[in-house]
Image 1 (tube, rainbow, N blue to C red):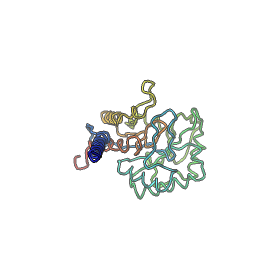
Image 2: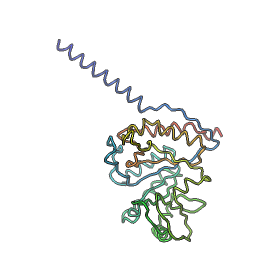
Image 3: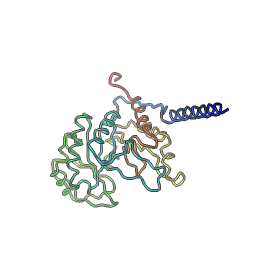
Image 4: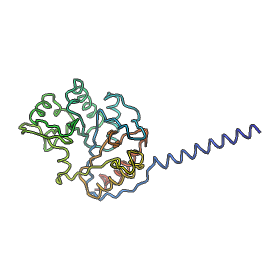
Length: 283
């Protein structure tokens, strides 16, 4: 009788494990079909935070990156650059605050990141995006550009160039005052993305926060369905630049990187979307 009970328990555990595995496969192996009528494939730009905004206290469940990051270390840089290369990212928009830009260690970290990028993700372009820590910040373009130039932040190996000039983007609600006359370029990121000539579409990973669903990340991310719909909409618009928001903005719930909530699901969705694009031998 004892052996019979043990056998039943073992069979029950085996069934539970198999059932859980099936559920996991169903959740983490997306099956979406994308239609992409492109003659030339679009560029994928990615919002990236070297020091990501923390998840808000009201957001549930609590999520962390896998593996968990402790600072902008060499190991993390190398790992993420390989992931960007595998994900087909052409341009990385590196979001930093004015305080971060002025930090003593930041120049060394940024230079190391560019060095790794040329080795591990050849062809990847990197542009800094200066983001305010508060709404309505006012910045002198002339002073900011001179400061950035003095530190050499726009002369690094993988710097993005627009019309042949390295560029500094300004993000968020920054009021830019005075004019700048110099050899570099600057632009408001929202204005750049809204410019019809650039044919850019912004793609969020999670649905915007609503009072109906609350700050439930699982509902807002919806097993990749919302992200897939956003990508297909960008394809329908024949966007030339698809701006992915973002790699690791946990405050907004928009994170593409592997994480404890849905593992690598969003990267799998992106891969499926890119597989629908024309290949070089098809054009």
